[in-house]
Length: 459
Image 1 (tube, helix red, strand yellow):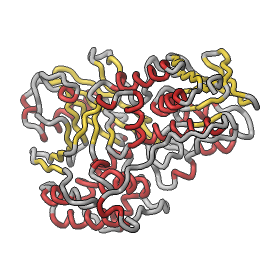
Image 2: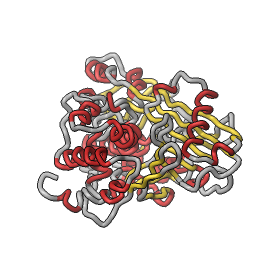
Image 3: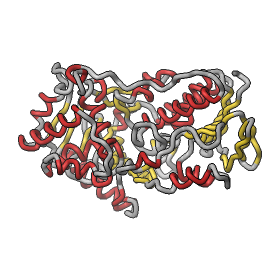
Image 4: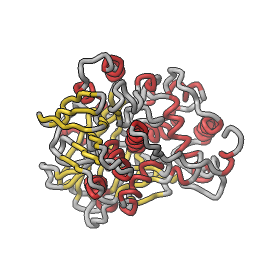
């Protein structure tokens, strides 16, 4: 088994996850990444305009992300994540609501704090409760209905949609409610907020993402593998006894290949063959959604909170990076706008002006503080859009070529475009490689077990 060589194209989470478990299983791994760092869309680098090390976008995980947590434990970085049981919702003007678990059994463990939330009226809460119980009983099928249509059909008020469903799910799926799959919206909500208290815990990396995922590259190297940066796979040729990749203009031979690249990059790599036709048609159907991270450095501390959900404005989340990274001193904040279609064409100065103005509506100190420096990072094609019916064109790990496999959060993982989905895809591809090599291996970790009343019957 140690003689079998697996080449992995792409050093994002999917490729890293596949490389780590294949290395553990005794395969010789060569991972190639075109950038000078690993992590893909979950990476960090020194920003030339500020001289600061910044993440390309704030990434968080939830307790229900079982495979991502497994990867962190495997590579030894689980202690580099700070966990939170409490979410802070802030209205313009500064009024706060907090959601946190109680002693009640799931799915009612969040009910006491939810009922106290000042951001919602009683009618909003009753409507939300009815919809949540529907999701708790049974996940809705993907029938082509959008989640917004589902919410309207289930009697949700405008304030419930804007201040509850939208702030949670647009951030989780990086898509508008009017374009979001009912199934995946309900699945994320059920796993995170209904099945168990552990599922809704939020983890925030307390180190730059480069440090977090650089550990995965070292893990592969320690197991005899190779990680090549600034290296691109341009194309591949599948053969009966192996695969040949064109890598930086030279040929690399391997026994198996895992293509863990974005779907558009894969489309450019496909050979002219009958096996490529159906896959190419599937790839052409994908759409993407952008995300924006606004980084602001002030001359003083703006808030004592590590993070907060911001209501009723363009800004959606605040992450207090100077606190999260244990830097102390003045505030360095990252403000996140998911599904940021309205910001794609806006100039940097206009976005920063908007962010500072809105931030002052939530934290009065921001109106008096001096902005020292700022930058905006736009990921225009951050994630694939989890549209209704999108599972019909999400490919599995297996392809028409017996020795070529796919990984990426856009493949059919059972999860939407999240870090958890990316890691699951890498594990699924690794399982397919092992099976093709005649080795039984199970790498994918199951979902968190339901607790409390969620264990009863069809709940």
